[in-house]
Every structure is written in structure tokens, then in C-alpha cells.
Image 1 (cartoon, rainbow, N blue to C red):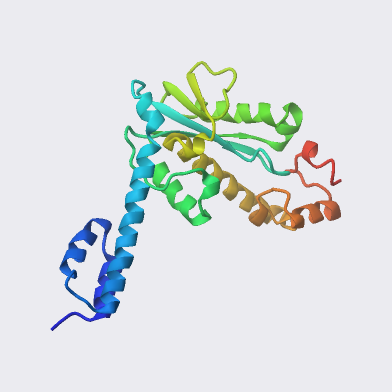
Image 2 (image 1 turned 90 degrees about the horizontal axis):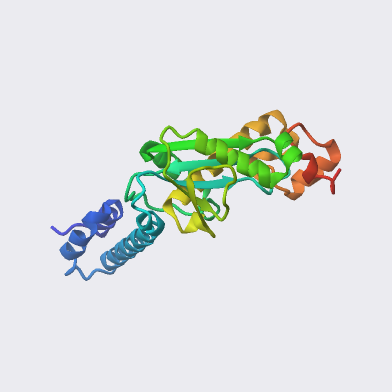
Length: 252
């Protein structure tokens, strides 16, 4: 008795990527429209996976170019633009020829995908360091210098000493390790992309916690950026302790 279209469809949908070519061959002679549709969807899933594998291999370009260095560390920051909250930097050393898929500039990923990748990165990374610069420090020395401080702190918290830093666009002052600044590095280097994800998830979680303390400003949804509801609350209630005074002079 032939399998039903429903059973075949569910089987293809549930199959692991490496199982799909065998299923395609098995159902190659089945001319039923529903089966052909399920096979076609499976082929599209396999093609999308193969494209992602190719893209992820391209993300190893810089790591392979500098393969003579044992521990290559990606550096990125999140939170330079918000009106409130800290700037957070991530430093990540991944294993050689790391094959984690879907790493990208954290802004290009959904919150769900960032959370999934955060757990994978934290599990598989050789070392991870996170640095912070508070709103008070940002006001004191300006956002650029505060960002550099957060990056230095992130590097300093690594449990493995890096031999090379791949940075998203900047060269960090007062760091003795060799640095390679890469424009849009979070979308070009798997190490920088991983650091971007770690920093973004860390900061977003922190802003959700701040929302419980200061619920008027909607920090859980706007993460401290200048969304309309945030600006309106700022004008109504004034700044709270985590607002950057140097950033809000146009509003209060």
C-alpha cells in the first residue's frame, strides 16, 4: 500500500538535511501533486541550507587569512546610539574553522535567532569576554572613549589570551595585541559576528531587567533607543538614573 501524501509530506518536513537527497530519490517516481509539492519544498530547504553553508564559509575569510595566529578574537559593540543604558562590548574566540551557521551582524537577525545563536556561541567558543561602560562614564568621557573602554574590558575578561583582534571598523587604543579593523566586520567575519550577537543579547537582556525598575520608558521594547514612546515618557517623567545626560539635551 502506498504511503499517503500526508505521511510523505510530514516525513520530508521532519527529515534532517542530510536525509533529504535519499527521500527525493525514493519519491522520484511518485507523480501525485501533493508529493511533488512536498519534494519541491524539501529541495528549496536543501538549497537554502547549501547557500548558508557557502555564506558561512565565506565568513571564515579573515580567520583563514590570519590562520598563523592561534587565538583570533572578534570584537564588536552594541549600544552606541541609545539614549539610555550602557554600551556593551563582546570579545569572542571561536575554534579554528568554526562551522556555526547563521552567524551575522546581530541587527540582521531576529531576536529568536540571536538567542539561539547566543547559546551555541557560549557553548562552543574557546573564550568569551563582555565589557560594559555605564551611562555615567559615557557622559564623562564621550561615547567613543567609553566604547573603547568596554572593548578593552571585554578583551581583559577573556580566559584565553588572544594573539590577534579582528575589530568591527575601529582600532582600540591602549591595546598591545595586533589588531585588524574590518569595515562592516560583523557581516564579514564569523568571529566579529559572534561578538556582535553576544553583545546584543547581553545588552537586550539587561534593558529588559531595567524595564522592571523603570517601566515608564518601555525599555523592554525599545532597549533605550529614541522610540516615540520613550521620548514622550522622557519629556513627561524626566530622566531616570540610566539615561545618558549628554544624549537627551534636546528632550529635557
